[in-house]
Amino acid sequence: MDYVLIWAAIMAFAVFAYVVLDGFDLGIGLLFPFISDQDEKSNAMNSIAPFWDGNETWLVLGGGGLYATFPLAFAVIMPALYAPLIVMLLALIFRGVAFEFRWRARSDAARNRWDLGFTLGSFFATFSQGVALGALVQGISVVDRGYSGGWWEWLTPFSITTGVAVVIGYGLLGACWLIYKTENGLQAFCRQAAVLLTWALGVMIAVVSIWMLFKQDPYMRRWFDYPNYWYLSPVPLLVLLLGVYLLWALKKGRELSPFLSVIGLFALSYFGLCISFYPNIVPPSITIWQAAAPESSLKFLLVGSAVLIPMILAYTAYSYWVFRGKVNSEDQYH
Image 1 (cartoon, one colour):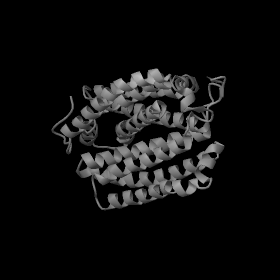
Image 2: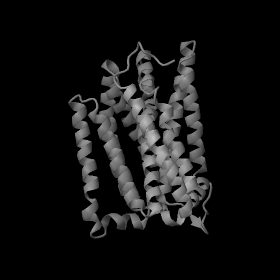
Image 3: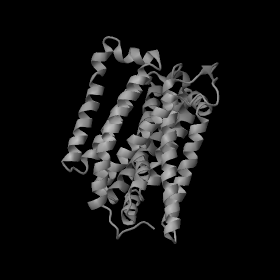
Image 4: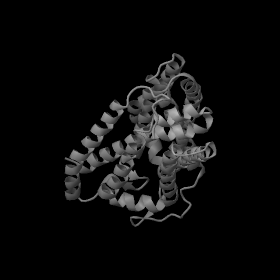
């Protein structure tokens, strides 16, 4: 049994769970300035009130799990991405404060300030995640098992582009979540926004995917060497088909299908990214086996995760089941 592969799969799942679950509530923060009615803003926040802090459990699991199971990767990635990761964490903290204090604002002016804080926190957290992803994709300089690059190596046109792409993707997730959870004017606005964001995301997926191929030679070989392109060609084709289906579902007035379709787009894009990375965890030079902790540690940690992860999945599923259905202006978070 290859415990390194098992833990690589667990870490990949934790990151994807965070991206999807925290992605839609960050997306609502990105859409917030474009929602004019105060009741509709309250409904938008009310739709994520039972979930937003629990969604960030996966971020803790991913960061802590990386430190415990792939310590070399953690030791290289952290100094390489200190700046965007610190901005992300500070933005998440400020966003959480704004979320809580908005409900306790005693005036419209105070509420508007907290709304702005909620939006700015959501934007900087999202953009920082995209920039960090782009910096990892383009490769991290490593010498003697340590980061050898400079403070600003993460900041490139490619990483800024991936930051914009993640902002658009999270905005689409948030819009489709509100289509599912709200009604009337807010739902109609989100449906219009989702159509525009779907086209924008399609363009960004194409741009980032093509640009990425030229960042590292292994990426190009992985996708275009024979017979790889026969096996991997269904991935971009499925992305295209799912994008067309998403536009159709939005046009037909579907409510749950658009949200599930966006999750599918994220899953396919993430799968394509994993294909490009494998077997590296820190491109272009550190593999998952080189970065892994000793096998005895991986075995010990796997025992705990076998209990902890099902518990997290169970209470997450239960909370979404309890708070299923539409939100309204009468039942507000306090």
